[in-house]
Length: 170
Length: 100
Image 1: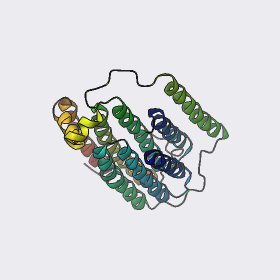
Image 2 (image 1 turned 45 degrees about the vertical axis):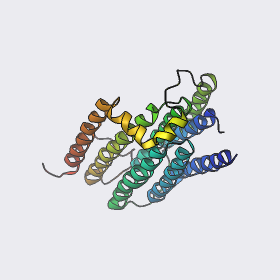
Image 3 (image 1 turned 45 degrees about the horizontal axis):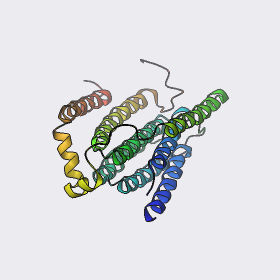
Image 4 (image 1 turned 60 degrees about the vertical axis):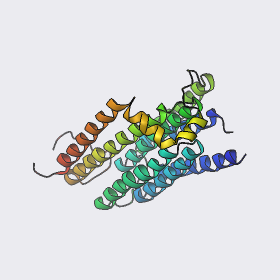
């Protein structure tokens, strides 16, 4: 019961703040609402018993990535947008239409196929006994070792790319 | 007990909000925020499936998605900075040159 109430509150908060992100004229306000969205998503991850993901969500998303966004917004010193959305009426209609079509499409898929596939070998009780973070870490360094190493290369490429892009002369 | 489909519907709604924001807004920084929203919707679906399928693989994938999102934000914001330095705008409609 408590879980359902918490889920409804967090879900409504997530959707409302997500809508506020895309209707704000001021980019700083958008960023603040996006941080609130991330926080409520972290709460939903806690409801799903993904404690490690919830912590990483707050630290990496709400912390690191959004600070980067705010930093750039304030560095660029933008004024408020006079025009919120695209100029042409065609683009507006097509945008809203595509969004609604997407929602209906995804909803139909979710109605038809639910939970096909074989259950894995980590039932909630076992994960709780071992500790969520430990299970994720063990998988990360055994089954997912190659993707993990490739991620480090990806981050290195991103660092080099970001420096080269903003440097005036190389 | 909240069912799997409630989580998936929330994920679908978040993703659609991200799509609408991406298509309608003209400020490139807000467009990037919409992309982050869509990535988060995917993460939510991953975590929900991993919970209801008794598998931890979904949560590991979410860690990778987050690192990709961090890399994407760093490079994307660097592109926006470079664009602002030369064009003095962050409006997607006015960014119509591949070189300058």
